[in-house]
Length: 126
Length: 190
Image: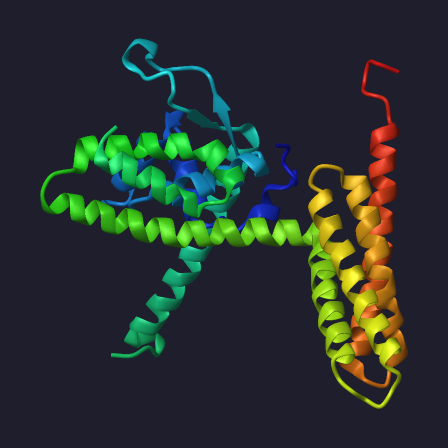
């Protein structure tokens, strides 16, 4: 299915599940279980994606053109042919980059506000 | 096939058929992987708790999305079903209520409304095999419902008349679109 938007900012903010999948696929193609494991590792076990959450996110990302299915196998001899592998598209990489910048700005704002609130010299609470 | 897989395969019927067609197998593969790595004793319960919650949440969301998408393009079919029910209810209700009017008029009204409702229901069924014919039947079945517009002084009934008018237009429009689709030559054959 074709993507519906060409401006990465149109898709922001990304839903949490889609952001996690894009991050998991950022360093190469993976199958569903590998994506799930990578997300678990990235979040120190705080996020475990169930099959419905994972494939629901993948369905929407395929339709938005953020990821694509690939026939290539990192190690064909070690793998099951029935597995489906996914990788990030160029557009997906641009969306991830735009989302990262947005989150960076948000974190900076949050830090500035909490520091101001916690620092007594700046009139914050003691 | 393990018991885990059999159970999960059965539970996947909670998702819409179109979704299952594409994603059921990869989801089952993911379950196999998890069973291999996570199962045993208490961990099985924990895994199934997580899977169950995931399934309820996402199946509901997929069902809602599918229904909304189908409603967007086929609202008039839902509306035709409602009009069929309303016409049968109003027709039979009026036919069995003695309001002092002539009996033959009430009987004729009840039979006419019931027949129109039957034509709509038949059209909805036929449309699955023959979209154009089905849409035409729905359009003609709904047309008598437009007559309910004369009850404009009684808003609920008058509103059904307005709905019938828009539904008839949408059904005729769909029948005409189906005709164009059928008459267009296949690419490479014309």
